[in-house]
Length: 392
Ligand code: HEC
Ligand code: HEC
Ligand code: HEC
Image 1 (tube, protein in one colour):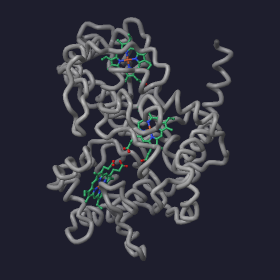
Image 2: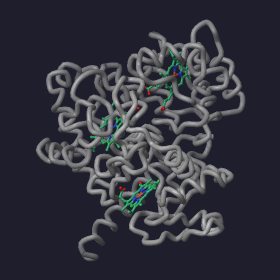
Image 3: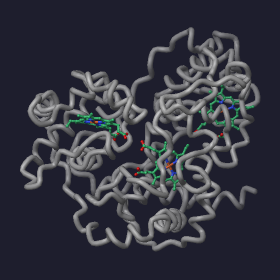
Image 4: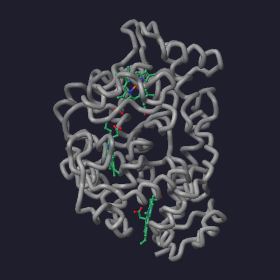
């Protein structure tokens, strides 16, 4: 067993080292990224719920030894069958956790965590409609609190390496056949067997797993409605933190390339039609952020002539602007809370592209045709990063 795993572990370490080296040399001068967030003060009520939900039977929480032993349980886990949960806080949205407890192997391939359906009201036999009108099992009050507790486990932990960030370029062309096989294993649990975005767990997500076989794809750097191969590769490599889409950086480049080839094959005609527009990919490097830029960004954010960010995201970025209700009704999910939630693409260039091109139909792009407002957009990027708890 060990001799089969070692080469993998070594390859992974090499990959990570190369990645880190790459990031270090290519990162523009900007504030240090991904600063660890200090642990939240533990709420005794939440800790008790975690104990009651019996997560500790299988999980250790090394960073909360004292607190858990005070509650009379083994912080080291009774029969540690699952990973140490330190550092898992904020990595996934609540919906991911409920989906994971409902059907672990849908969100995490080959998971041997048993489904925890007793943690849902009436053992999951009752459901209620989500914002999109789909029936979804309702987690009990204790389960909600246990998940909230897990969300406070945010201190950096040696057990959990941060997901990669930034943009990545594909050098391998990848095999559609291999990609298709990997998709069935790793992706279909969330995105559905046909990639259409409907699966046994999709109703749990506030914003459901994307429809990959039709419609608009949002996490791109192209003006065309479809992403470039590098965009897809970047999404797979970094994951979409905060959305529930995990990083697949642990797969070799050629396997990720296979997945990209398979995703592109679902749109073969459109990909061919849009190919020339990929030349328009935006690729500006981030300037060094200064306190003045943050202040300018703060003003632009509240500007009522053109940017109007506060109409949706609220005066302080908490997602509670006056248009919130309307956005919820139209799309089934609301404007992001830019303060408390982990951003999907929070690194400077990623945020710039988001503001320049917008996100799907819910948020429009702000880059003017003559690109005369590039500096404004960078100021807004500086501001958003300064208020987000995971980026500042
Ligand atoms: C019977 C054992 C068992 C119980 C009980 C259990 N888990 Fe797990 N858990 C596992 C195993 C095994 C894994 C690894 C496989 C996977 O990711 O699904 C895991 C994985 C996880 C992960 C993913 C961690 C990561 O690194 O991505 C989270 C989060 C988690 N469990 C939370 C919980 C919570 C919250 C509870 C209590 C409500 C709980 N688990 C109860 C066995 C268990
Ligand atoms: C745990 C559930 C989950 C798994 C597993 C998962 N995804 Fe996703 N994925 C999501 C969610 C949720 C989104 C939507 C995020 C958003 O737009 O905010 C998403 C979005 C995407 C997007 C971006 C689409 C766009 O609009 O640009 C791509 C591409 C993608 N997934 C591909 C994959 C592939 C390929 C795999 C398997 C290797 C995979 N996903 C596995 C949940 C998942
Ligand atoms: C009409 C409403 C609306 C307006 C106006 C708006 N947004 Fe958004 N914004 C949204 C919605 C909805 C989302 C979530 C989109 C999604 O994930 O599909 C979002 C997402 C975001 C994100 C999250 C990106 C990530 O990586 O997770 C950022 C940052 C953001 N908006 C910043 C801004 C800024 C800055 C402005 C002003 C220049 C602005 N928004 C204007 C509705 C709006």
